[in-house]
Image (tube, rainbow, N blue to C red):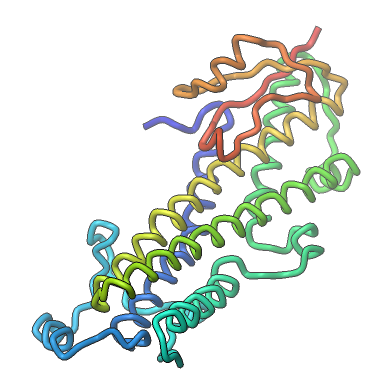
Length: 295
């Protein structure tokens, strides 16, 4: 499917998507090790042990269609060998405390707000790259319209107050979006674990269902975040560049299928300071962009 669109950011979106989803996949391995191999929740039984022995000790992860085997976590995400608890409620609390610790360390990589604003979190690399491409895209469109743009390097452009402030906002937005994904995933896992403990699920079913929540909430939303934030950064850069060059209006350029932007395109042109394309949770995965109206 040709989904690059006029921004030509398909490869970048793919790289960001893989990077942001990778620690969630590692977390799935840690969950399996914690719940099945280590029986940290103490929900195993002799029957489970016999089944595992008969299967040769396999720990294949089939929650993603059986395409990969995840049996251990990476160094930054560590399985739990066991929890201390007397009740199911305490077991649930202990597991979630462990899960949050792994997510903060391995997925979110919790750091100070200042470092996030400075672009020192891993997500900033992709935001900055998308922003660079947005500036270059805008310059190309301006040249097509006969408008000369500054010959300054991208670094010099980024140091200008308007671009520096915009990048700071974009770095913060992407980090906060990832924090929301991580929090939502943890909430979903807590609910699933509560159900499992109340219904007496065995370790394999428990791990499978918990990892399904990591897949459906964590990985799916993280990949959506990568695609959405890439385009948001690109279009923010283009809008700033147009405004910097005195452009007052822009046209929305759609890329099929995008019903939201098709409706916006029908209302062209738009004031550059009110650029309508703002990919978010209600408008995810958009690959549409804006072009300058030069009169």
